[in-house]
Length: 143
Length: 143
DNA sequence: AAGCAATTGAAAATGAATATCAAAAGCAGG
DNA sequence: CCTGCTTTTGATATTCATTTTCAATTGCTT
Ligand SMILES: [Mn+2]
Ligand SMILES: [Mn+2]
Ligand SMILES: [Zn+2]
Ligand SMILES: [Zn+2]
Image (cartoon, rainbow over all chains, first blue to last red; front, side, top):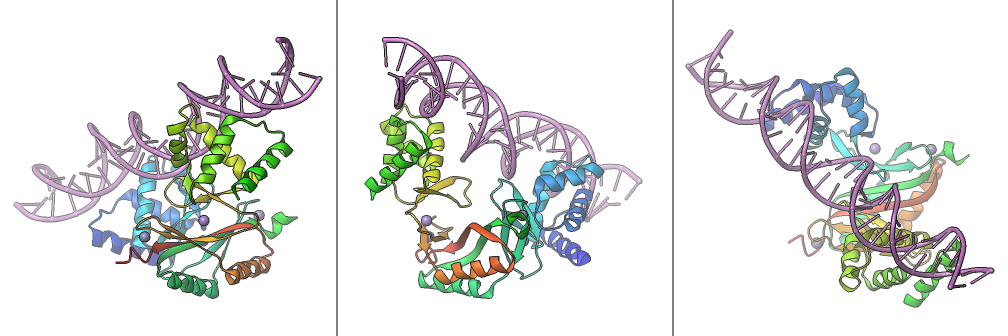
């Protein structure tokens, strides 16, 4: 799975004529090693502790490349920081976001997706993408 | 309806011990006179043309009060600006957002709302609020 | 009118993200 | 392995929306 993603990125880089750099390799390794929904700052700090030379601008730039390459997706929750999550080809899910502990629970619901299509059709609207975020308290935080 | 909202705000202000100020009256008038989904900057500029003395910090502060009072809701789309929309007591809707012309179409769907409750229940999650935004092209912009 | 706390507006601060740009590094072709 | 050209990088400056600060003003109570 990790090798798969590295290959995906290398193919993308090749097709775009991007150069292979130490920084991009490192950032990809660290991104692939994180759990879901890392903020740029979080990832940058992790990388910096082992590779002090790497600048945050490069992390910002490289994560955008990962999105272009199709192996990451931007997730904008309401804390003012852009986060990135892993994405497998064709996969989609939405989020339950706990405002107590910041936990994020992922879910998929066919019926909701389908209803969205119906609503869009009813308005002659062509869907490009969507986001459904449910905010509240997770089981732990309801206490 | 406008009088209703003014009353709502006055009640809120009274209950919180807030003072009645010229600025708040003006900002409320202008907010109530706008259509849906005004950005702070848009509202501020409108107000400033007739009332040059009013500062943008006051507009920012006052819109937050309107949210607290229950007559406005924050809408964060992806253009980096916070927008505010009117909200009637208890009413809820979601948005189709056209990335071509920035039009916003509102919709409500009982079934989707219900399915969200089910999903939350399945995870022991307590919903506080949610946002569903569908991005794409409206009928006009599809060409 | 006096006193006091809330409010305001100008200006400074914040913070995430982007732009700038000189130095460094990757990638040919020879 | 050099040479030359182009991309990439990292430090730094910049942007832009929003928040904070704080002295001056205002609203409200007595
Ligand atoms: Mn996710
Ligand atoms: Mn709306
Ligand atoms: Zn939680
Ligand atoms: Zn449109």
